[in-house]
Image (tube, rainbow, N blue to C red):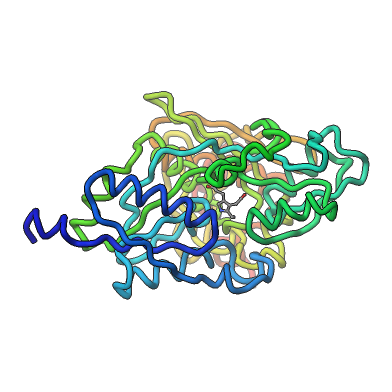
Length: 379
Ligand SMILES: NCc1[nH]cc(CCC(=O)O)c1CC(=O)O
């Protein structure tokens, strides 16, 4: 394909129909047009839009992504824009995240009746959220409120506060800003109160891996510092094998040299709970994690790295939350290191079920001064 025909080709950009999705896709489309590309928006319906059941029941937020991916692989569209936090950690064969544009404000905000802040809400106030991550952090920061499960697009969630049905809801600042509705937020929740979902506030632009011309066109949207940070956050999620509905908050920043990753995990019973069905227990399958300065592959037939940090340095915060901060160069190593700290703590305190019989326990620290690798006896 020569230069002229590449530019003549219309880029078909797939998008969900929601206002948030079209605002995100519209932003990417405008950006691509300003670079000289012709762009056509193609509406794609996803299971997450069709089915109103709780996301934890219909397969997590991945349901928003899969229909766009199918349309990409079927050649019906050439690229797709996703909220990065909605994308499952597992790679999609044949597709590539060609661009991660610059991230918006990653924080969550409270939208409340009469503009009240979290602490101003009265005893027994009802806050709606469908996110276990938000629920566990709300329970810790504001034990006087009640959390109830809700779903729906941003507009309909806000309506449930305006109508008086709920006292407040928690939303991503980024989504509200993209909708031009950030002014309706009552309070920006500080990071000490509420760590965002891994990847929150960032977009991912995906295309077919073999589509060199599209990969090249999308590369102009890339923001390297954002990619580094979300890579660390998602490496943590992957190492914990936590689904997107697991109570894991994480935010990385890059200071030009080092990545600083801060993360929180909720009580482990919610990490492994039955209603968060798509979340397998960390101990149920092979895990590759890295302790500081070392990385170990654990066989796929099962294993768990414990004692990675020697003395666990993951500090238990209130209400069963574990919170920790690590710093390093390699974002993937850093995410795995963070996971090792959490798992170390959870195994040591008996909060995480140890690996099943026949799997390997890989112990590297002084909490588990055993053989570097021992097979769990039994059944
Ligand atoms: N889970 C739905 C979803 N996916 C992305 C956003 C907001 C935009 C973003 O986080 O990038 C939202 C709404 C919300 O969580 O408030």
